[in-house]
Length: 130
Image 1: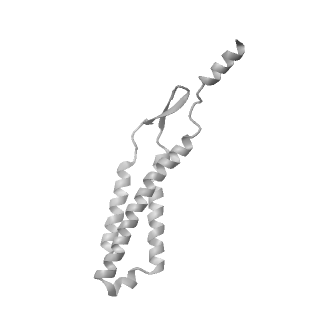
Image 2: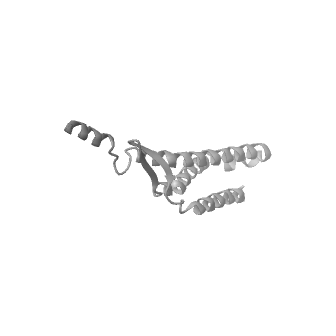
Image 3: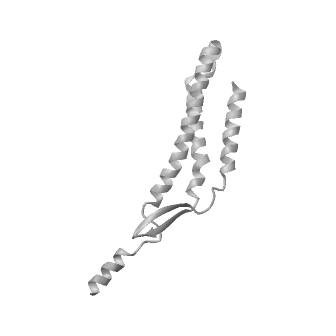
């Protein structure tokens, strides 16, 4: 009887937060940052092809190895900076049937407007430079 009560206590116990919450946060952040990197990379590739076809004389001036490396670094750095706020958003979990179930964010993302501002400024700067 005592053993049964101990086993029942073990089966019905849920910790304060699931063990995989850190993994969930990392994957949540990577999903958005990789999407941003992908979109920005496609834009840079389109800009590269446009310059090669429409402005072949100035192509080598703007698309040197150093300039491309700087663009790639800025692209990845901006993506990480813009999406770091996702680590600060509180994620909600509920213990159901001795399992943790993800119920979503408990509050809205506080700086989503900032993310769109950074994207707009970045694209505007690139447009002015070309």
